[in-house]
Image (cartoon, rainbow, N blue to C red; front, side, top):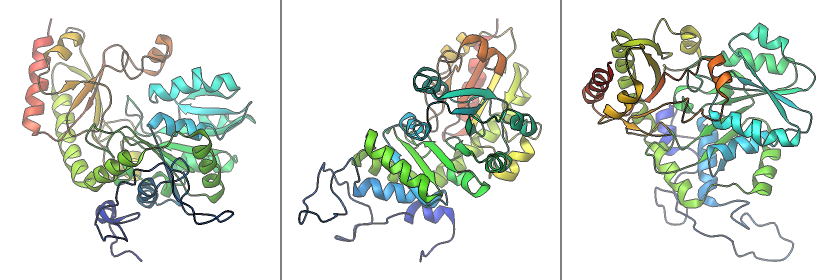
Length: 385
């Protein structure tokens, strides 16, 4: 029985807490590839670190508890986690994906799993009635992000989960942008939750990792088999770093979101900004749905400048906010989705779903908000033509 009720405490004390041998408050880094066994034919708790490692097991127990799931799985990257989940499917199966998802998710479906006869189609998952019409006999899952990357599109996760259950298919949610601190899809009925733990869960841009959580014993059995068979596991040192990062997730995200709300208002009010995408703004698409299923709007913002501003000059003029891939670290980052995170999506598809060449994506960090806003103001002013 735990001695806490709130998520802020679970971040620190959840999963497997401490070390039973030394009473250290941190789970040790079990930097070993194999384990001595007591005898032939006996089933040891630990045998080989691809199959299981105590440090990784502590992380997996922690993320399962935070997402209110039964079983967690840690992988060497977010894409390794997605690959493991997609490995649940068979030749002839098709997966419906949100109209804007991370480019790597699109790429692995389009360039890898297509080779094995697993198909996909890009759909507007915000239109539940329209989505239902796209469910044919070969559709076996719906994979969504909410808010989605990079347009921060909000999907009603509970409605998608109910739709999937009605048709006997899986609902899969990439919860990277929100984390279990802000949103818990399993509580809304989702079958599988995925994280690029490289982002907010790690939080310091120093570890690459992926996590999966499920609430079903059979799904857990299948994923454990896939994890062990394909071997894309997270190592013990990175598992330790990720546990450490998660301990401060609550205080970090509180600051991230506080800054993001101010940055979103600043951009919304700016004469140079044509459009802002941020689910925490009252006039944003899906605002009411997001308010119902998430704690707040998160800390990711996308926006477009008017045509008389040169975005290349904007990027070059930033002095505090770094132009870089990834998101969710303590430092503010900016990227150009069309040429960076979503470059693997064909141009015509990007245009169709709204990922324009003028779109800018901001990951708001935890620096002083005045410094962030001053840097954005400077870069915008420098980019006017």
